[in-house]
Image (cartoon, rainbow over all chains, first blue to last red):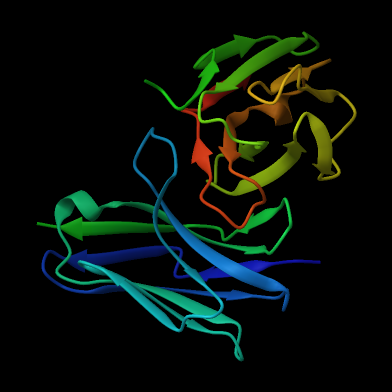
Length: 112
Length: 113
């Protein structure tokens, strides 16, 4: 069945360093790849997304890359700040579908 | 204005009881979802509804029965609660299909004792 694997499960970085989270997906029909950030005790919220017709997308300190051939996509956060500390989820969904498959989450700690 | 709101925020109940969680969205979205987030933070889809119609049921036990009286509401009723049902339940909505941003409610933390 469909599966999204996410690594690492925990990531600790120093403030100002970069953080990279990687995901792979199994369903070749997937073409929408959102990333959600969930702060402690809060709801998941979309921070960036990418579609299969694009290889890279950037929004200030956040960027996503997609390799559709290898079924890999990654989240890059540069110049990390303590407020970036949260759980990050990658996800995959197909066009016209009604199911989004989430990765297991990465707990990011940014040390001041 | 809260886009997706669910009540209650916390629910503590005994095994065997029946409980309901309500969800409403004011975004005009066609699709609503229920997700379960367990203690390890896994976020797993349970149900998808589009225009009040059940589209996805992810092999959820029959004790869970969603109901959508209109496309702005998707409630979740759970019968005969078990200890393993303890989790945070999130309602969400999106415009059209799942290849668009999902907006989540604040979650309902269910504890079965």
